[in-house]
Length: 452
Image 1 (tube, rainbow, N blue to C red):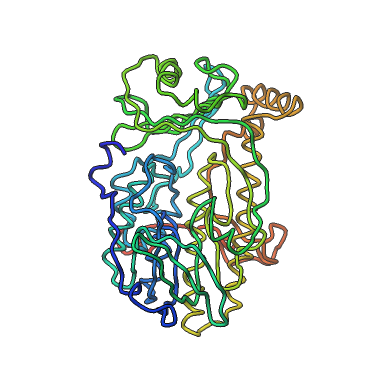
Image 2 (cartoon, rainbow, N blue to C red):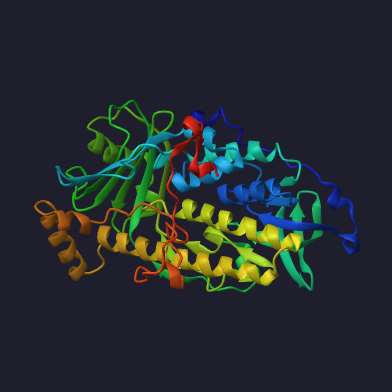
């Protein structure tokens, strides 16, 4: 972890909990167990606790992950975090942006503004290192006595019951069990809970490789998203530049699918690439990683009393900031439904709507991510010819610009119901289901519609 993160607590120690002193036959009963203390697991726990539910939040580590990882958080996510009491802190630390520029070689093809009109409480996006987001969420968790956050508590077994699930947990001091009415898996793309329920994770794996380098430097670049096709400093490939807090810049460079990851991620090999891009070598590395990515999802997001969210349920490429933002939409969708079911105000069948709506959103994100990846890294001569033609047209025509795909930025998914179909003339209720409501200041500018 870099020095940049020292203002946020990132290391947490294991602490024994009273549940561990119970005999197996007298395991503690809990309403909800959330597995995985990433941004989504933390947010879901906070949401449920604010609704009056008691939550056990388990994580097999005892620290916040290193490296920036997710950095782009959308207006919809910030509005959700506002309701959880952390939105302002995210914006205060984050780098606010709405303008993006697409380049081909040395030439700018076009630019876009994701939020051109004024009057919104929150910006289109903020760039914020994931470790900051997680640290601020942990701070909020520690303010809520209804959440029991347990570090170095690893789920090693699940057993269904008529009224819930028995969760077996390993700790540095041995194992223990507890009973939960519902378990929510937010334990990542390699989810052990998904393996425990025997669920498949189907989709497409991409062989193209991308280098991520977070570098610390002083630069006069504007706070915009810059994306290049075939840049002069990285011929034949693509590149991306984003500003983060603390004078840290995220750089993505497309590599050959045949590149050796162990060689490419060595700092002495990365430095010349970045120096060619920037025109100087006055920078320090904060984080270097090499990745391939997949676009895939589970067939069903609900397996009995075990519910899956974020990367445990669905995975997309990082282009378009659709991973963490989509996961936060999962949490927002699930929390109120789970609360109503636990209170007996709605039947358990309400939870099926979570699967229906969020699996449809996953399909949309996978489709958009796959299209972006196919355009940025063509896998066939036909795709390469199409991209060449589109980039040529974009220099001269407006419709050509609209066809260029450097990663369509995340927007809330519109749910495919009979009344939300674009062909339906009967929809008169404003934005379609799933879309963001318009925002504007009211009562003299001290309240916004998004706060209602």
